[in-house]
Image (cartoon, rainbow, N blue to C red; front, side, top):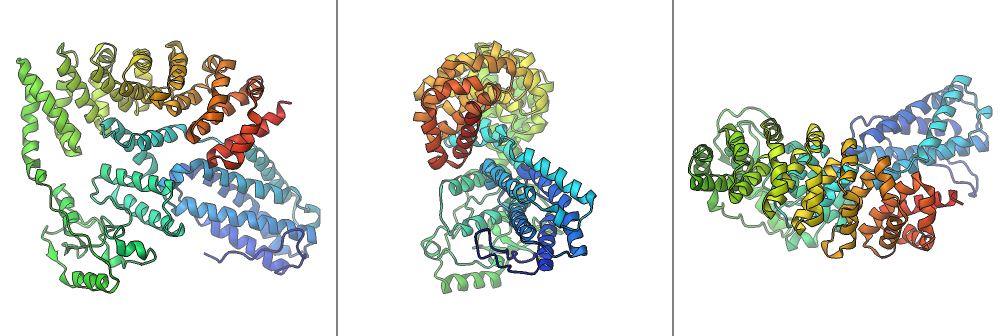
Length: 636
């Protein structure tokens, strides 16, 4: 990668040129070509990166003709090309970030990153707008191509920033429900891991290194964003079955390393699985070294390959690596680093095999003619299916899904409750989602949602949410009448039930047809009631659903009323920073389609609040406030 280009001074400087005309053009070409070398990007920014690369590609012919003809550059032409160079450098930095940056960071800051793309487009557009083509020795064809590209950039920079609302909602649910370990949230984690491509050991290792780099770039400062990144990484590792939950390695939180944040740990000392300093290194058949506990867990899960090389292991023996252990101890002693003591293996692990052997007999008990046997079997399966992926697979392989679906119609409330919760746990696995759906469970779950006990209703809503992660199920649940009882639960359920209902409804109204169904079921007054109930602390969830509904014409008509505008204004003035972000997003969406509504909102003295948020709000709130200020100017 070439070094950062040296750019000429900006207008108002001395006007001296830092490099020759030919060197400037060569620097521009080198910057564009180095930016084009990035070919794989994080999924959340992949589309925008492809757009940026396409525009960089379109400007290449201009630079190549300038290089080949080598015309003397006027001051104006030189200045415009220098501005273009600044835009190219910003583009290269942005593409590099989207190529090898932390996937979690890019997801959490997706809207800010989108703003960086917009800034690059504005820089390129500004440079090309005043380009004196008549003074450059370029062909008419190249001139027309660049002018067409510049017109596209002009339209692009005016585009309203949008975000992946599903991704945003998933992140909000996971980060806000820190104490809720139910498998409904595990299902969201599964979807997030898939969307962010953080499902394999290799993915998680690379992400861990990217986060370490990010933390180092921030000089070890641990702001709220960094804490959220580490928290999410730990959750993804847990879902993937990776034992280590400390992104900085086992020793990184000790006092010794806290005092020496710049201390670099030799890579050979880190276990390839956990990326933590090894305390008991062992060698496997492939010749690679791992922490004993980590590689043993890998082998116990049924794996018979080397995690690092993917080579088949000729044997499963583990040989202690005493030489490396001594080197690690010497390094720790020299750098005054105290290794954490190994935690003893949990006693519960010795019972795993016995629990697995119990599952087939428990599945048989589900079909017993004796109610007591059914009660005990389904209660036990509920517990086992929550614990680990292996148990969920074994329940499904033993015929547990059809047997559980058969119990959904049981009149015993406790059996119903445990059955629907067992299906919730099993539905974490995508293959199980399909088996549950094909087995005809959805209408039975909807019936429990209508008439079951409070806990059964909560878990029915959570199960519908989990099943609705398959796009075809969104339409099925809506068509079978699942939205109306969810709205009823949102209106009159327990606090937990309201939260489950809101999450399920959000997922379902991602489908356009379900937006109309939700409106007909009375979702708007139910959400307004949620917003008014401050004790629930569900304002952000309600506004996120409103944001989705506002894209549907029928829903927009019901939402877009002066009283609702007044609620949004109140939240913008008095709400939490997150409330303000969400309220601004909804107001921007509605105001873009119906300017009189925005004018009505502005009558409540919103100008001053927008100006304040544009300067002191969160980064997302600032962008929304600025967009609203620009939109407001067009209303008068």
